[in-house]
Image (cartoon, rainbow over all chains, first blue to last red; front, side, top):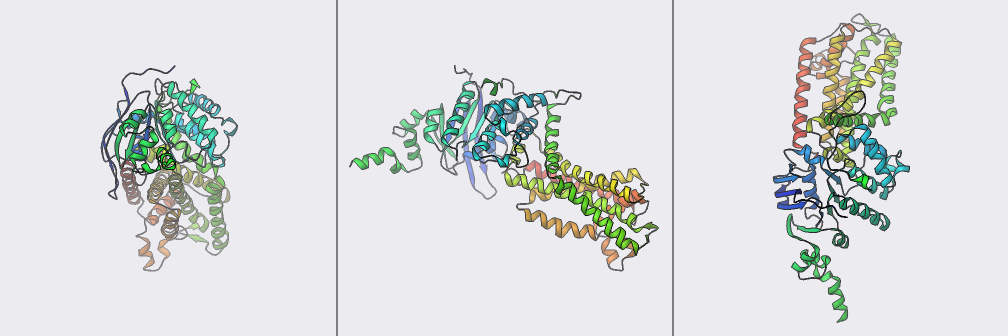
Length: 262
Length: 276
């Protein structure tokens, strides 16, 4: 049974601009609203601004102008409350080589002010849930890629965030782990966690996300349900809508099938 | 799986259970400092053992070898004259190296993003990174002092001056390590500062000799080396002897440490080379 939510916004971004010192404008006045409890997909080609938007939200990048609110807390001026509500599973496997699996979760919990007993209990739950219990005393650098990915997701969930940001979580992940991961994520979403997902796997986004936004060249160019986006571009699938967006409709499976038929 | 998500109240800044009740902010700061200490303790042969051996070798060489030819300096046995400078050097070099390496390594792995995306303030982050090196340097310095005390009769004549001097020396070099770590983009950047700036300054600052024994212009040149004054403060704390005006040197050192801390804090507030 899916939890019903009020109209509270988990993430509200208005006119967000990010200009790097080199002059590159990665975000050009992005506005985006993600309701509490939503499973939201942010799709776009490489360099479109997805990660920059996530970094501005989590404090890893400083916004040039605009506002970001996480559950009503200003992520720039009142970042402490905003960041407490966000869990980030980044695209890179950015684990600390010096720490063990257990320490990785314990320190993360500490950074978010969790008391020792709470950290210990939460750590045990997550190690069990992500099949990492046997690896808890191993250093992170000895883990396989799949194990590292699990640990990064567990770390993001450690402090019980209300908004979980997944930046291309299935890049380079085998089929088994991918399916397992989506089961976790769908379950926690059903239990109330808001999800912001970026991925290049459009079928996954179509299947998982309640709402989707296309970002390109630092601007949100379209948003809605996958059906609405397909309708907007006059195509039948999210993948075709995406190809229209990036100007590569000749790669569409429907287009190729039609050519083969001729 | 329900245990994964009970987040009605994003728990946290509650209270640490146990004898001491800590606020969420205190827990966070301790976690940041623990992480820094954990790093150097996990490689303690390199971070604590090697510097101790190095200092022991200095004492052996200068105490046993040179000491047999230079009997006293300003009324002190040569090895006793040298040890205060070695203790200061141990604290300074370890504080610097630890912080520069730790920050650069975390930037390199991007694991620093875990701290940067946490609710920790720039001040908390700066203090935690600083304390890592400060405590490592302090550990090596205290062990060096303990080992030296076994080998020779080392007096401590002005304990308050000594503690204040070592505190500011340790904190100054911790800040310098943070600054270099934040600015560095490759490990070579850290090595350049360490080998081509700090080592010459420390070696030419009078660790192994008294500047008053140097011919001109070297004696005058030594006076423009800031490390010379730091050694003077520490040597006064131990031996009641110094080439420098201790009160003035301590004041300048405190001001310089404060200025460096302010520079670092500004960099952390801006997210300079830490946040995009």
